Amino acid sequence: MIQFFKQIWHFLDVIFYFLGMLFVVIGLFNWNFIAGFIGLGISFIISALLIELIPQGKGGE
Image (cartoon, rainbow, N blue to C red; front, side, top):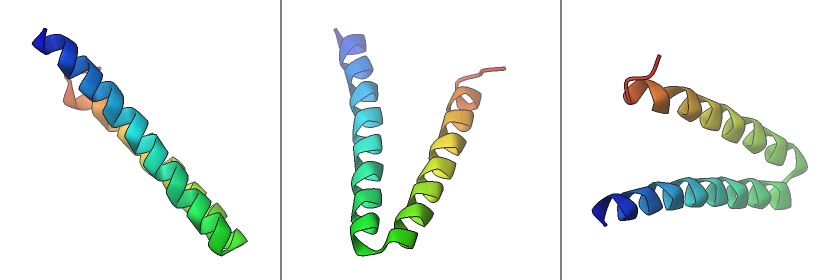
């Protein structure tokens, strides 16, 4: 049962992370078109780094 809640918690972490990034980028686009693209690029870079770092922390390849 505890393992089930841990899996749901990790799933919610990912969903809320992407929703948070999405709303930040939408806010930047509403503020300024160029700032929106800069925020989009930064969010892609951060997401890519996290995707690369998460498997290494769990003993991946």
